Length: 88
Image (tube, rainbow, N blue to C red; front, side, top):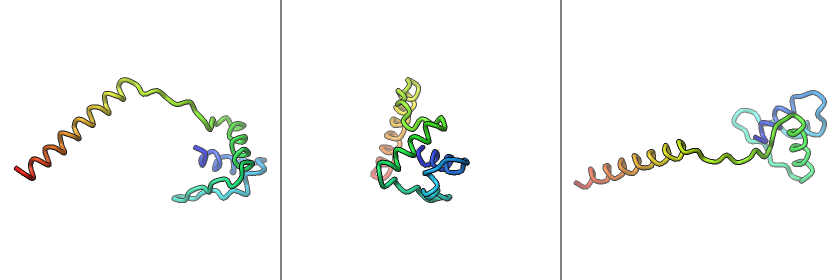
């Protein structure tokens, strides 16, 4: 999220303070801010652009819990059947 905000904000006109950060190319990672001031500048610019750098944590829904549970059950049955197939 922060890399996206930095990339978007670095290409807007009139955003001083972020041009010195290297914008990541394809397959590259953005370097971590070295000082607290750099990080605060990035957060401030993200807030000005309307990007929430710290979105609230979403609670898992019932359907997501059920889907994850059934996926785990199917995986365990698959592993046990593969194990039994090798030894029986």
